[in-house]
Image (cartoon, rainbow, N blue to C red; front, side):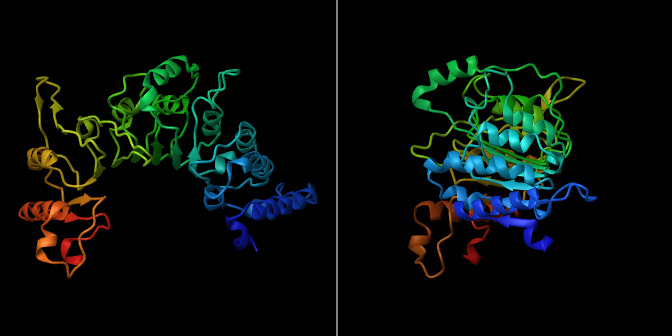
Amino acid sequence: MPLLYSSVCLHSVNSLQKFTAHLHSADQMWDSIRRIPYSTPGRWVQVLDLSELLAELDSSAYYALNALLTQLFPLLPFLAKLTLYSGFLLSHRALASLTHRDGSSNIRALGGIYYDPFIYSAVATGEDPFVQLLQVCVNLEILEVTGVGLDDTDLGSHLDNTENLKIPHMATPLHLPRLQSLTLLSMPSSLLMHALLHSPLPRLQNLSLTPYDDIPFPASLSSLFLEKHGQHLRTIFLSTPRSWPTRYHPSPTTILHTSPHLRHLSLEYPLPALTITFQTPLTGVSSPFNLPLQILSIPRPSGDFWVTLERLLPFLPSLKIIRMRDVRWLRRGMTPRAQEAGIQGEMREWDRRLTRRGIRLLDGKWKESREA
């Protein structure tokens, strides 16, 4: 029976209602004299996945669903992984229910979190409810958050709103000693980002971030975040969630300098003219040095970026794979003329050049041309 409840994935509001009612009824009948203070089957639940349910949910049902979650969270004291949907905003009451309950320190992974900095700014108290949640999730290992993005048609308003955003004084930084993987998409600036920026993250190795290098501080914290926490990163994914219209912002050109231990770097449009320099402590003169980068991902081949790549290759002796993540090799059977036309022709030209250097060119499915 515990295995049946250990990992719960619900696909409808009706299922969530029944599940919550069952756990609440069992909790009401639980004998507090028992040696275990938490009721079953609630204490057996370790994984709760609501992503499919929330993805199909009509916005008119958000209030009712938040009410259900407010009731459900306290019944799951050993919940280790919670997955929501990046289009669903948890209410303040639901967040408080998740925060102020027994077992908050058991949470290891939070995924699919949607964060609106201007709703969660909590002007009345000066506290961000999501930051309060992270303060008690001291064993958190994986955090995935998506923000509201940036309206480029009203950039001036965003800059004004950011200046008016109340930044509370942090008496103590967040304590997240086990955080290994962090995703902050469509989030130029927020109280959450500010808290993470000024907190030590000693085990952080994987970072997914939407770049906003053209937006000045403090309206954008992304470049400063890379500079502050990049030293020990092994993987960086720069990504802009697709919308209509999708507006891309530049990435810092110094990523390889601020994150010298990278093994995998995935870049976003517009592709930056990367530089690698190292400030020697004795002379203060900048000089290039070898980097351990093994995998470089870009959306698709670009003539301008080839110039940058050719300049970097002598300092990337460990580079073995370049991946074009938005392109697929043409399937076998297509005519040679089709295979040499357009983007496919550019891919094959890159393949020929890189093969001579011992580097494999892979498409978005991690396949070589001969495997397509």
